[in-house]
Every structure is written in structure tokens, then in C-alpha cells.
Amino acid sequence: MVKLWCSVECPHPIPTVLKKPGKWNKTYLQAARDWNSNVVRFPVHPAAWRERGEQGFLIWLDDDIKWAGELGMNVIIDWHSIGNLRTEVFQAPIYNTSNAETYRFLRTIAARYKDIPVIGDETYGEAIIGFFKKKMTELNR
Picture 1 (cartoon, helix red, strand yellow):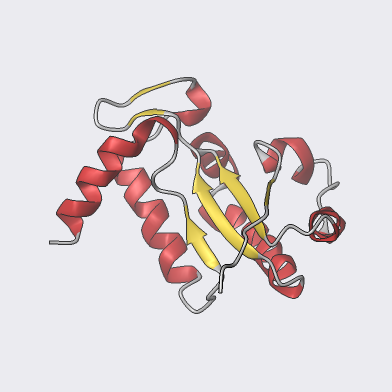
Picture 2 (picture 1 turned 45 degrees about the vertical axis):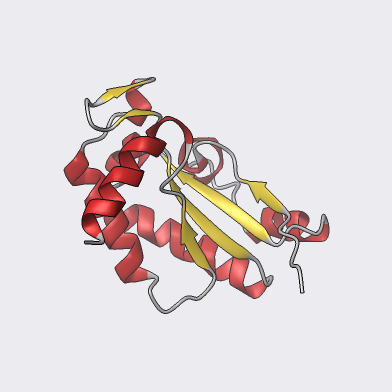
């Protein structure tokens, strides 16, 4: 059996675009589901993660993941940093991060959502593909 994944991406970054003004709610995901989407991607910019604070941002993600689950959607949580993590040269300040912060984020997401089978993360996106491929190989030895 072949399963077709039809996905929708949430606005970048959710906190400053929709959550801060209080406009983000389950109806956005319901609209995506009505369009036959079964995957939703939540980009998490490092600057927004720091600005809101880890626990504050996780509370936002908890709601998002709960709503997606209620709608039968899979979730991708994207540590959305565009640049070179090895040299710490990034496209714009919103993407600035470090190895330590990135690994902490990935460990935090993995631990918090370990029992939710519809969660994935995007560690091979955009310009950091080569770096993460090498690091994941090292970590899996």
C-alpha cells in the first residue's frame, strides 16, 4: 500500500505572525485538513525559541500537536535554521544558533514528544544537510 503525504506548512515564524496577536487556533489546522493535508510542519526559528523561552514555546507546540492529533494529522517540528552550523554562519540573525543549542532543542523535542507516534523532526533541511548527515552518523556509532 502506498500512502500519499499531503502537507501544509505553517507561517514563519508562528509566534510573531499569529500566536502573539492571539490569532492562531485549531481552525487553521482544520482548514488544512479540509484541503486533505495529513502532515503539518511547524518551523521553529532559533531566535523565536530564545525569545519565548523553551518552556513557553513548548506550551505553544503542545497545543499545535494536540490539535493536529485530534485531526489525524502527522507533525514535523522543524528547527528552522538556514546556514552552516559547523561554522555558525547563517542567512539572517533569526537563524543564528549553535551546536549546543541545536542538540538541546532536538533532545528536548525527542524527550517531550517521545510517546506521540505522529511526530517527526526535520534535521536534513535546507543548507545544513551535509553537516547533519555527518553529525547523525557520528552520533549513531
